[in-house]
Image 1 (cartoon, helix red, strand yellow):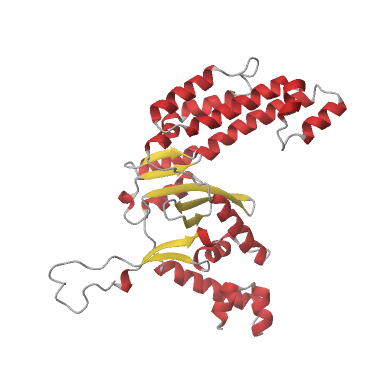
Image 2 (cartoon, rainbow, N blue to C red):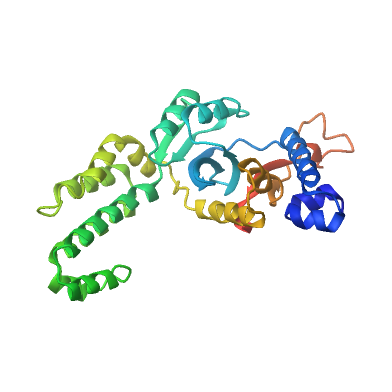
Length: 313
């Protein structure tokens, strides 16, 4: 195996020990290889683009995915609006993007509206429902401060296992918050936007007595992003970044392979070393081409690359 291949698939220290080259030389070889791959690696612009984030090397990084193909497209150094905007501006055939799923980070929304005005924005439901869990946790923590040590231990123990029998008798406020959280989850079980609109309004109107402040962050969020949240029910399919955890795992694995890797190295290892999802193009069908010997054969030069296949991670 050549040094450049070893540098791509193994930690620098390992390659250095195997080849006798110093670690800096191995690193330079890998960087040159990554730069080369970055120049010629092209990927298909998705119909449904996912924008999320990853906390890596003490900083939030922007993740871009193809939701329909379940692939990782790219990893950006930051999640700043100008960085995301510049990236989207350079996206090949960006007019092909019809839907963009994202979290509630406003710079993402601004960047998409600026560069992809034709695309409909969907706020990822997992980020929204997570806020309902946060509200429930606020109620639980608030109650613990008022309880005896034995009751507090019970409440802490039952945090992960929702023992309803205990909550019903001892913690009615917590039970009310739990049931309200479950009703919020239930909004995503309806099938049409009108149904979802009614369910959301009913949920806001039925906040448990004395808990308006606890749920205020979530109510404010769904108020500010109502259009983007409700669009989820008009896409004809579940549009979420639910598999972002696979990307987190991949990034951590690459980072673990060599302590001290820079972001650029981790990105290159994720994008260019991990298996890509590829598809052959459809056969040419021009009536003028039918009489040639090449008719019916795919053009391998035009193989479609969707980048990192998350189903294999």
